[in-house]
Image (cartoon, rainbow, N blue to C red; front, side, top):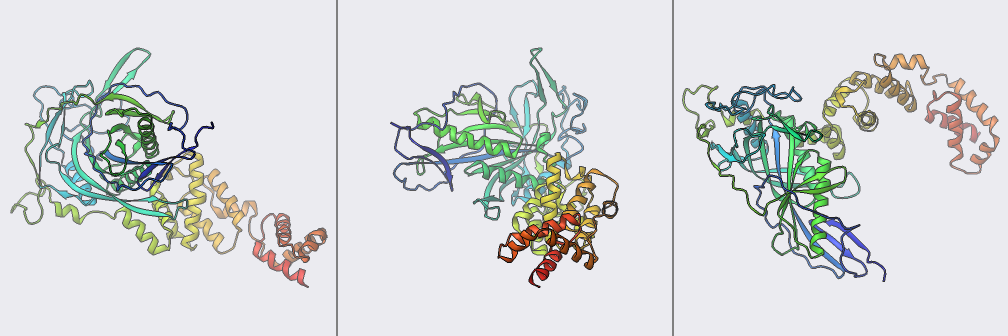
Length: 557
């Protein structure tokens, strides 16, 4: 008997495993052995049922996936959360460590005002309710990179609660098929980062770098309102753009400034939620999506084969494209939360509750921060669509690449070309060259002024489209030259002599009588061949539209 044909798919919020000829259930591909290891970590996200049960069709088995996220964003601040130590990426090991960071006896925390303002600003941008009174707690666990044996966090009463994050996700094959979704935000809390353990396997030793110990973090806890990796990645990317627009975090995932833990479970629609697993420390939106989708399929595979899902912490191996067990959670860790005795309650004010004669440097005014919120990414995208008639997917593309929107705006200021043409050149040609060379926008050898000058030449028909691409390639290779200089050196100007162009067209027609005959017989492609031959003869210096008009006139006479 032939093996059953099977298919995994995510339909709305249902994961479906279809068996076309009704054979026994097996996982996709070869069976994978999943073993258990141990590592720390426990989720604070409470899962909630979000799926409405639907009737299964014959030969199809439905699963609902539930995904919640905990996101740690490093606050953009010159110093740490509770000490005056500086914050620098890739500084020499243990060169940015104060006595407090090393947890020497007698040292006390001093709260960083900048970190509090960043938390309030982020909460306001994410539609949260800002608590005028919040508390700090100690969360105890013992690791070598946590010298105090506890982390200062906000477990009982965080600084912001009950927010929401709107994000867009592609719902079809076309980029224009976009749906807007919303995920609830449970809370935003301030907390310390830990140090970093560096494992030297050849020498069988672990080294500790405390430069990161005590750096201020914003933990943003998203409720389990998502159902697949694409939704989670889109939500994280939108949050990343918001943090960058606010300036509260650089949110550079490659440098560990934005780290994501994903809580994932599956169940049949209408039934209780399944046992969840947590995938830790994901530092790429693409890997986040892959890790979640793999974990969903792994759990379905396990359950379909009669096995149980363990409540465990897992990591994602990006080389293998799968999650690996790190630590089981069957014995729940007791963090022994207790109030932080060295920090009083954090009190915030608004305009109505501001004490009379209060020193602005000693209080934080929520309304003052609200009035100074910058334009958020959703507002910027809407403005681009309204102002330039831009497609929604193009507005997303401009914002998704750091520095690309500013580059676009600078080009627009200096060119007479239509915004649509500017958008096309930046997204298709300029961005394509950046990707090929693995460069950021700020590292581009082509400046906004140079691209604007090139588009001006193209707009006034001084050069052809193909010549413009040649000029762009030369600009990329030859830093310092202007588009006009390159056009002059390479003689790429469009032919302005109409009589000379007509003579070239006449010569080409005489040299290719068979092609001319094909045109007269009604072959629509033949005239394109003649146009190509004329352009070749003129070294691409003739406008194809003008060539076509001349050829059509000569052919009809």
